Image (tube, rainbow, N blue to C red):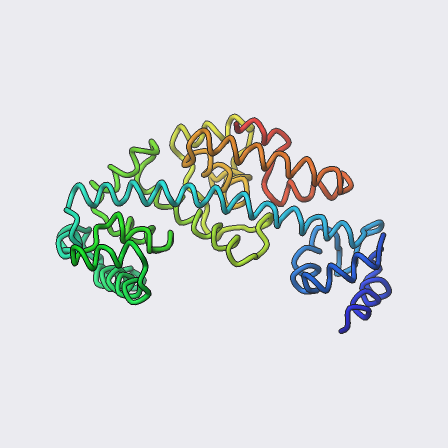
Length: 310
């Protein structure tokens, strides 16, 4: 459909209202029908028809909110990534040395379990070596310098050419004793930290690929049983599902992401995220009717007193 046909279809077939068709045409041309309408119409429809008094501008305002949300979430996730990589490289380097021929010895990692979907030591070692070779070939400055001057690559160099997903899997291959050293920095059990980092990787990918973030639900719930984690849910007055033992909100929704940010970010960086997020919600509240604003909060898993998480 042409842009004009898209507007006419939304107006005549879907009964969507417009405050400015000129704005709508410009936005549809810039963003695209699928990326805008299909991705952000859900709070505004029932049985594939728009509710009364829903305007194109409502959908566009939600799109803009989610776009800005992805920016601040990506920034926070990157801060977590930087810190996690630094801690991981410190443990590997201090425990096993700075040359990859030494720290990549099989005995320095947990033994493979033989599970079908396991990330094996051989896969990990190959991925690291392939990543180093790729950066040598691409003349990446730090890798090039170590290659020319030392002919080896300390893990504190290697870790910065790996994605957070790759680093998360390397963490999963550490011995439990080494995981504990890393996790102590966050005052968390090592398995909780692994789960939280995997969640951050998924959310970061949503941001990087420009998918819908505000209503994203992860497949797995985040672990919640230790005191400093349960305290957050109890402070917000979130109830548990008696059948599953999981909290109704904050298990796999956006609130879960905020909780992880609270646990993994420095106080300064969390406060920075919190302030920006609160500002985004305040701006969204001014552009949507109360019923739609509340639907967005509910989709994100945010209770009315979410701000008390600070």
